[in-house]
Length: 538
Ligand SMILES: CC(=O)SCCNC(=O)CCNC(=O)[C@H](O)C(C)(C)COP(=O)(O)OP(=O)(O)OC[C@H]1O[C@@H](n2cnc3c(N)ncnc32)[C@H](O)[C@@H]1OP(=O)(O)O
Ligand SMILES: CC(=O)C(=O)O
Image (cartoon, rainbow, N blue to C red; front, side, top):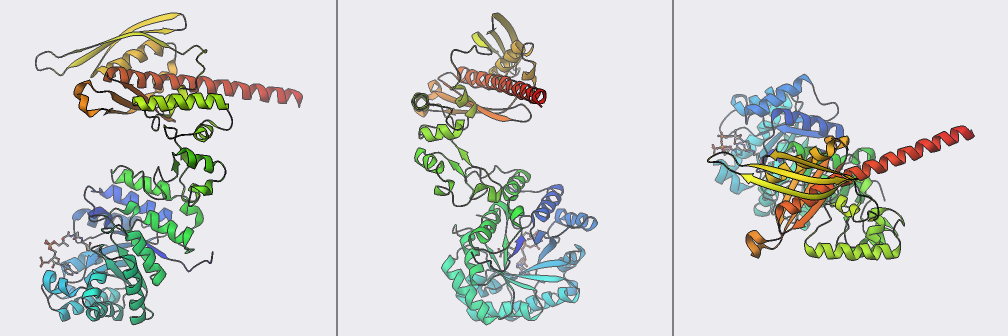
């Protein structure tokens, strides 16, 4: 592939990204994200609008004390207001006070907005743009000019839309960025219009800023780059106003891996998946599993036919290697599996054809009953255990009582009898609900014999009703996620009784931990014995 010239990355997660419904970064979040974007290799990081709110102003104050290492931090603002001198405009004063070397100014390109939203004349708007850019350039600032609604403006009145860009460029703007603010433009239009702008403004460095209202923000960004834009604006995970901005987590690998443009170091690209996770965590939004390139499902294979081909060559069902963006391949085992899924999931040829067939039949039958092994790989692994081997513990019986007295919060009490080897242990415990009481009672029964269980914690508990029409008599599926501080695993239980389903998932979780621990210990002992015999032989 021919290596194309580089494309400049301009991240606006902290400004346009924070315009997404549901996001409210703290100042500390903004500082952490800015540093992470810098480490990743974004060339520009737009931090916010200092004239908008005290949080953004404080963010820029803090960043002056400890600047970014490589990226340029950008403060954002609009042009001066109509009829107000730049020197007297408070918003521009606050922009300068932010102390950044780079600034971004948004101005109007669409005549409809100039007269309808700003309520001023077309001439005054041109003056607002040119004077604001010149004002900032005269004060030593780099100016990135964002031409709001450029594509809609160009379609309505191309001469005027181009005149707004000329006003910025002639006043010394370093970059002129064409914005598809309403996200209504399609890729072929973007490609044509950018080509016309290039012709009309030779030598002006162009950028692209798109929104995803038509679901084509990434495609529009790529079309603009192909037509000559050399800066791309976007956000991590595509966060942004309404349907979001161009998602840099797709734009960057598409440019770099598919189109041959240099954006970041190939090693840095391997940090993209971690960056996406970091930002979704900081934004307090659930990760987007189906997100291209960096989502958990982006390289997850479920269908038997796909997995069978993957075992021959991963390129058969993967457009790029997952490691190129720091993601990983996963293979699920479910009712849509064939032998290949089991072979992949359990490694090599550890199962003979008959075992595979029997296991697949069992999985398919259990999924028919309502089990789901996708998020419950530990329960799946337990299906493979040798039924002849003694189990770490076996349930003899449990009883759960829930009591509510008067207006008090209800309490639950569980008593449990389990057999461990030839001992029977009988315990009781209270909890804030029946499942919690069962969990506490079971651990109490086992903790003396298996002290490592004290490290195991439940991190998630989900219940799903499987047949809605049965009402409270319906079958439920319980999925439990557990951790011992270093590993996470999922287990499942299904029953018409939610406590029984919870028990199954809970018991599987502890049993899986104990079997894993026994296996790790056995492997450690084998390795130690091997070392000793090699040392003796040497
Ligand atoms: C496309 C984009 O995403 S641009 C970024 C948009 N982001 C934001 O708006 C978030 C931050 N915004 C804010 O904090 C506030 O809206 C502020 C501080 C900027 C302004 O607040 P207010 O003075 O109370 O005005 P309000 O928000 O009601 O209206 C915006 C004003 O800006 C004016 N304006 C809009 N675009 C521009 C522009 N390019 N140049 C100058 N003024 C503009 C509008 O005409 C309106 O003025 P008016 O009330 O005299 O009609
Ligand atoms: C500038 C900007 O955010 C837009 O036009 O969408």
